[in-house]
Length: 460
Image (cartoon, rainbow, N blue to C red; front, side, top):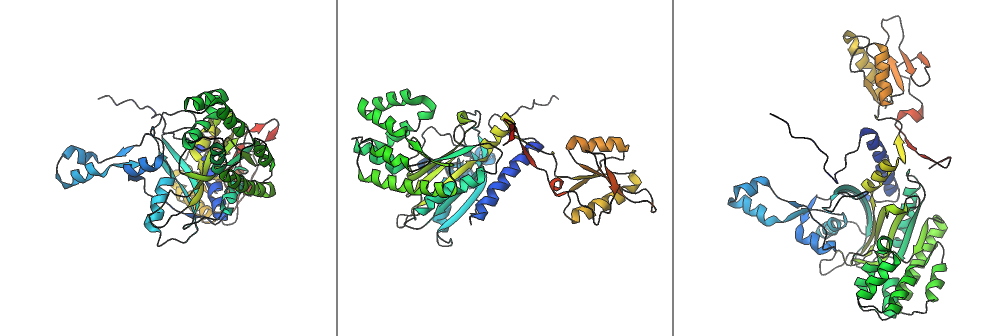
């Protein structure tokens, strides 16, 4: 009987071991930085009611993966089948909607302001393309409070992002920041009534260009002068407070505009003080989702502008509410799988080896394997990752086995009580006596390292 052909599933990436080490490095940097800033870990279930996902998702064309029990569908009768048929569950497409539900369910048990991080899988049934997947890992942070949220939290998040991306092997970057109140106040100041549609159109600037956006704005009901004013606002950007004067020079006034400029100035001021050049006011950043109400963020890699944003988010005041109390928040989401896709496809970084093992313990013969196992156990007890050779082959073959995996050291147990063990650095050929109760590899070899690609003669 022939076996079905095995083919990859588009949009469901699976990385090789060396690439997984790079991915784990990204996750370690992200988690460590989140925790340094006092964020606590949260994990939510994979499924939510489809009605809630659609209601909070914002995009009518977003494909949600539905979940049902095959047994329930095939039975077609009985309480279990009825319960499954009426459940209408879907896999979450981001971590913000589950967070809103989690906060409402556990509000009485949580400490506010809640500083939460969440690193978890999400699923989105869209057309796969470079950097966009159907199954992917996100790393989110959010700060949520009760009824009101202090504005200084909006200035904190870009600094956290800058601290993370400084450590990742992705090259130069910038955290672009805007405030929705600037856009909304400006649009109302020039007589635009359908602010939400205008925001969604302006958010397409990087995809369709200024001419395309202008045509769409006019088609949506704006006159040519209004469309040009919207584009003029979107062209303003600076890493200092110069954006304020540039907006004022357009001659538009509105209370929301004033409020938004003051809020964004506070964010940029913090960026200038703690991450100079990394945080940029860019008034084309709109974030088309309706639930954003204040500061919005998008992070770009300067060496790969065509790749688009690799991290985004913003402030929301009404995403979570029980009808009595509101839980406003501000958050950002890092596309970990999106970053990994870029790193792998462009060769931005590689792991120093494809295994955690720093040592391969050789086996003299199968009868002496217990001695090799004892050496490995002693090394592991002291935190040295190692592997015992899979077969008692000739030492040359065992060394080649280690070399293929990038394992830097091979340990040779003594053949008799009068001899001593020796360990060999197979990169240099240096071999020396060693005691498994005291020997350790150099610190740089203890764990796999991530090596950034060389660009223009310098390491990224």
